[in-house]
Image (cartoon, helix red, strand yellow):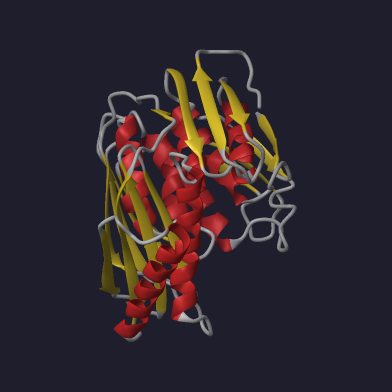
Length: 353
């Protein structure tokens, strides 16, 4: 049984989610202790419990310690089953994080798998639906993983109520990734959305984002297409998503509205993240870097890419993966700085960074 110290590195919920992903994939049991010890509210929270129970369902696992506030749990998976799943996360729990927990277990299977997830689609501390569809899905396709996403309803904090559907198609093999240069920026795309609020708020977000981009990176010589969305949702909310489409890579940046937060601030926040990525000249944004390494650890040969920022989240994620999978990796660059990540999966005996 693999023993995992949940206080390692950034000590957050990603340790749990990555462990669940790989435990299901390899049918490898684990014990996780000090779960989210460094967080203001340590232990299992409702959104983590949903991921645990979803992973339990797909793998017929035996689980111990699966309760709110628990700082220790055991997960003993059996075989993956089924090809159609539906999970209601409740309130505004992140649909994207649950989906990303489940997907790796089905990569390489010879059947189509369908997920319907209800909960939050544009909520804090998780990839938005538009990030998944615009950045994560194309990146997976580059690796040989075909995933189709659709959204039926939007879910904002705190009410949730969003519904997304994901169809994962059979994967013949995973391709490695060599992506050191993003190439020239081709266009800027995005979405400015509101749910049960005046569309003028989305218009202000869009204008503020474009004005901020002009201020930060100079007059926009790139075609820009920022779509306004009146999002169907049982609650209320706003969001701004900007996407960089370059010759060889995509990157995405989402900012969320909240009560008392000006629409202009929402647009400016997304633009500031975009500008930071643009100035770095790196291929992948920091979130994509963190999300892709699990899949690259399963590829044969060497993968190598640049990222706009080496995060403690990325470092911690690689550490967890190495507990389940023998491979070598290196990180060139300090936390918070531009970096180059190398992953070599040639059955080497250990991992390093």
